[in-house]
Amino acid sequence: MTMLVFTFVLLVGSVLRELLQPLVNGQASFLLVAKAFGLLIPFVFAFALPMAMLTSTVLVFGRFSGDQELTAARASGVSLLSLAAPILVLSLFLCGVSALINMQLAPSCRVAYKGVLADMKTALANFKLPDATYVDFPAVKDGDPAFTIYARKNRNQNLQDVMFYQVNGETNVTVFAPYGHLSIDTNTQQLILNLTNETSTYFPGGITTFGAEAVFPVDLKSDKKSAVGISDMTFSQLQAELRTRSVGLSRPLDRATNAVPADSVKKKKPPQRTMADFTEPIRIQIHKQVAFSFACFGFTLIGIPLGIRVHRRETNISVFIALGLVAVYYAIQVMGQQLASHAQYAPHLLMWVPNLIFEAIGAVLLWRANRGI
Image (cartoon, rainbow, N blue to C red; front, side, top):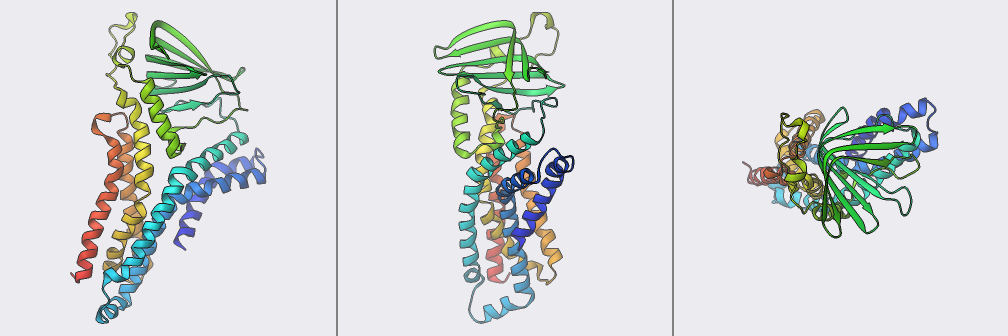
């Protein structure tokens, strides 16, 4: 029941924000909106399942304790650990389900969902390259090049610490520049990337060239596939992306990202970037997918003793406790994602901190509750 409730709440929020307006404005048919709605369900399941497991565990054991059934079980010689064992086994099984959803189903459905949204409306005129995010532009057709653009900062389409990666058959080129600018040609539906003081490296061969100015047009025609961001990649795609970036960024970045144009010597010098700074967002997403798959076990482990300690029949207290714990869990993960540009702190390891905290506290509380402390 809690799974249905959380799924409904999360879906309603997304539908009202993204799908209702195109339907009302006549930009999309009911069938198209229904298709987008169905594609959004697996993505929502990734968040609803751990939340539902925690809430239901707190509710059930809170009622179990409030009705004095725990006391009766102990008087009959049945320990709390014996009662909780099937629930913990169920949570481990749901961890496997969560892994399947987080690492494969949810990203794939999210990409398909965005493709449906692209069919509803065009967002070319409002395109903005996000900060510290790899944005991929697949080839429009066979034989055309594919592109990837990364910028540490984007201020009104003025970029800093830019990486441009182009794959054209067996020839790859990686371009670094301290500054760049984006402009959009709505007539030809192209994204024009202007780079200043660029350094290009061609593979295979590792030939490096330097240039004061470089212009790269990127096709953004609406009939091609939607760009897949790191947050929408499957686990296997993330691993392949990490290997690709590591090869393309195997050369030192200091000369490329710290070169200052001759006419701007007095300007503030950009901070030094390392290879890890450009690949850390991928590592964060990989660890996030795997770590979040174990959330069901940690939530269950801490939910059982908390439900017993609430010791009330009212569901309001239990629900608020569950939502508070979920908020703490996500807050720690968000902190790690905000440190994506500071690879020296290993923010990808922070994705595991909520699990370790919840499991450690839950194990201690469960042991104390089993002892009657």
